[in-house]
Length: 188
Image (cartoon, rainbow, N blue to C red):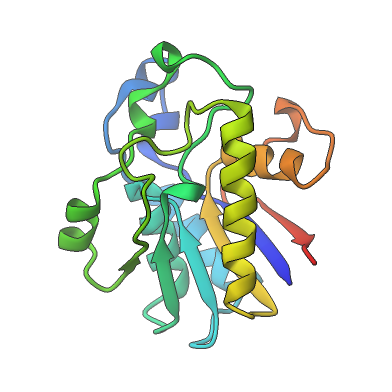
């Protein structure tokens, strides 16, 4: 199975750091919308494809613009939500990384499936490394259950880097992806 981790397109929270990192629920910028549209040239989506999306507005918007109304399966999961890399304390978490609630996603994005799991409240942003590794293993096994040749995961730079590390790669912040950057890995 191939997993394609794709970083969300440019959003408002990156325009004027560090102040803009405290924006709650930032949306894509017009540049970000254009970046998301260009993803379709790199990864043309069909109705057979599966996207797993982080529960933040910017990742959901990236996926919706990218798929351009293709009726593929899109699932929102907190297990690909934002995660700081390297891990810092909860006090150091950014407001821009607060996940949307399940009810808000269901209300604002009724065309998406929302995974039913126990991790909506806490998410993965500031959980311990051993706890993340356990959830990452569960997530990878859950992906295997779909029996898809490839799965697209729309997420965040820190989350993607954390999964790359979990999957055995030696990574640092220098390995962060830029807007709509992507990383492919084979998982057996």
